[in-house]
Image 1 (cartoon, helix red, strand yellow):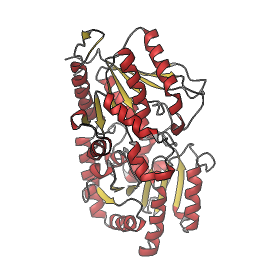
Image 2 (cartoon, one colour):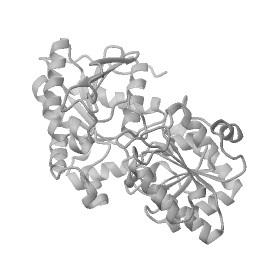
Image 3 (tube, one colour):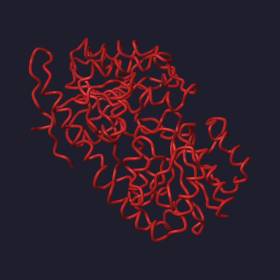
Image 4 (tube, one colour):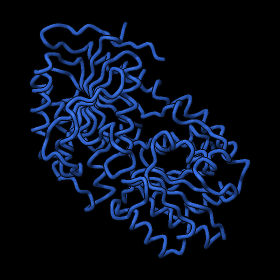
Length: 431
């Protein structure tokens, strides 16, 4: 079967592939949407990514890459709005997306919704235009509420909406076995409607760079031990846990490694633009480790491999994590990962082989594992080699797209819309 005729509509209402990664609402979902669309296009598919227009200067249609367009849909004020405040604007998003499709005079074989609000829109389009849809939630409201409690800014109706979307979806994509279990136990989802397909990484962006060269490239000391924390600057990512572990390392083992913290809303660390940086700076001062912590601000995707390769170990200890792409990127660069045993991290990181797993929010446990990894060069080298092999075998975007297209094919072949059977045009020739 040929894939060159398939047309797929992605809906990602708050997570645009054009956004700067590392901000409050720009992280793993943005990367997943961008990379999945790009790899689908390489296989021959045509992908339109529908996202909310957040600035009046944004054109309606951006030809982003060959066979991939980003389409900005008006929904609410043309300004940046936190995703927790977007729910009231989803009816407008759905209405304008329907109008856009009808005006274009062509439809899509399938919709792939990303996040629960995009699922609401996809459900509306399925009812009005007859287009089947699959959904990747990227995060589940019930899990988020259990982990964050009262600090969760989404309305209580989120769980009800998610259950409705699950009931209307042709298939639900779980990012890891834990995600599948949560969908079944917390939402009553039918196991038959769930397919586990992980996120991935790009081997052309992430690969090992000689450590000395990497450190010279980013301008850090060649001799001191370096811990890397990279990602969105929000409390649930647990960066404060890493700073506390740094203090414990000093107290318990007299170790004073460098902690690089990469991320934020700007390329220079700015606590006004990124309040979480200010909170973390204050914590570092309180714990007397300010001289060991370097905030870099955000960095482009193309620069991140130098940071991963320059580090001795990468740490990510969020309270919860639906999947977690940064551990894959780190392992692809040959850097062992110490991660919280939550969500996808506990499935992608192999304890004792590619890194270590620790409880979330346990700085003493993190400090002990850091001590072990930082003081055992031979173990780090073995983990480095195993990590690269592990992700190359299981987590490239090309592999993810093969699985995704198989799912698309099963959905398209099982659906009839516009009064006729949809011709199967999906099986790709993966480059």
